[in-house]
Length: 172
Image (cartoon, rainbow, N blue to C red; front, side):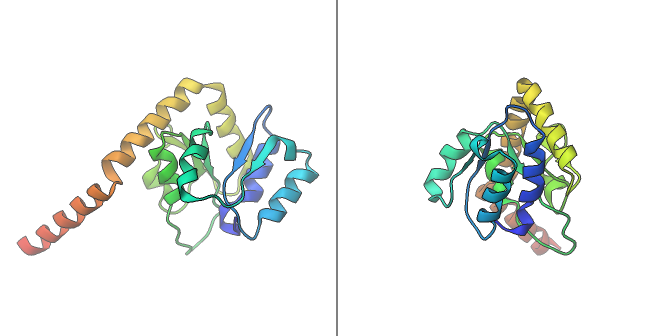
């Protein structure tokens, strides 16, 4: 849990949702601040903070989720790998994430997930509420995201792209 995870925006959005549960998997320097923020808002009982988990425990946590959220803030010049988003999509979860970095190229808005302006808890809450109100749409987005990951983001797909690029260079 670090500043670039957008936890402040996540908590603000979560505070605007009715009957929602929050599952945060992982640990980091901002874990204490997250717990304190949730407690001050009276939301701690509606949240589960797992702390650090072993890699083999991650699939079970993903299976417990209805939607995965990646509320990254605006970060000019900041590179990040959206591995968490890819993992969630591979698990068949719809994703709601910020429109930053590589995410708009990965998540097709309205098809495999929803994109929000970075730093906008109102838009994030509205997107989460929309998916909660339409489980069929959420399931469809999750299936589309999984298909995208299996088509374009497996190790085999990466190797195929590398080999194709190498063949193109040799042919040129």
